[in-house]
Length: 315
Length: 258
Image 1 (cartoon, rainbow over the protein chains, first blue to last red):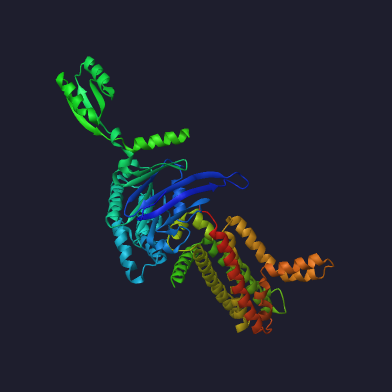
Image 2: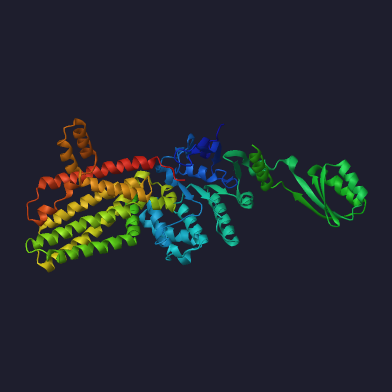
């Protein structure tokens, strides 16, 4: 597999075995995972629980070592530590020292990241304002809700202005408003030229903000590519909702066109291939039926995801 | 310089965390109690009253200082992994060796702080009882500080790869062996079996020798403390700590954080 020159993250043939206990047989949780993340994109890494998303991310963070294969970020092996001032990481359900305040914990991470003393205090305050925790800067973290800790987690990931940001379930624990804010924040990171790698299973978020996606099931990458690659033209369709359609016309439509038909009480919903939409509408209107709505149907990421999970289950 | 700054940040945070450990204050409280109880014990004797008082006090400092070093040290790494705080720390430009050294330095500072408090208590109790306190007493206490530094390194080593219970078991075991290695070696030298003699020598060379840091007898009885022995103790403490932390780093670097 060849990788582009703008590649930021490269994972190549990564295999990971875990030994469940002393003397027990090793269990393989990643089977040759390969993907790349390119510069200035939002990359969604999706998969069901236990698929290997967090294990892959931990390998990228140098928290666990791959059994085989290699992973690099910005051209550096992930087991090195010096390049890490260029990356930020939000773990799933982050936990912080409860005896520190939000300001103190960010100052601590800023020190670890090598942020100069002169700009530390200013940056801490700016980050806490950015994640809407300006009002709670001096409160102990033990008093924070799960959503507030998640915001602290995001702030610490960005405290040193990294080039690449890795987020493990960034929307976890947030209310709808919080989710929207974090979505906007992620989009603003891309606008600033950063690259974002996001582990999530909230597919609507992936669909709305990610440029590229990889779907992992049972430790194997099942699909990867740009969002539009998941939805090829020939799978695009239009939903046409009709009322008062004579039964014989419905039978004729079924014979002439490739379509799916579903009764919704008095109404009939037709899922028509994009190329046949005009012809179907003409036929329907000719017999005096009422067209209630015409809605383009995109094969959603959820459809692709569920297909991948089912295929993974059969494998 | 960057590494030193990171180690300093980690050490400072470790001190902040350690001084919130209730076990530390429990052990410190018992330490004060034992130092003070030397007054009662010394009344049981008509001779060497001051020596009994101070021997008791310095033993209490060593015993409870070791307790603090062990029981606070064993959870040092385990808690970070268990609470997953280590994930965010190691995602920063912090190497695993810096992390381990930072934790060790923070706890060593905390233990020295407790040692200083116990030394003050010792001085107050001695002054109240009218027992003379000389510079040698403080030299002996400083050597206990070196012993505790080595013990914290040992606790950090075990904490880097095993559970707190096993780490406590191993650390206490090594502390006890460390105070007996000279006796064990002397016993083995008297054996007719060469293998026992060789094994005794190996044990002496590999296991820590904490008696290097024990100058209580000299301090309490007003005997001179050889400056060469102090120098040897400093070099030994630095060398043993460095080797232990290097071994800890090697093991810790290979560890997966699931």
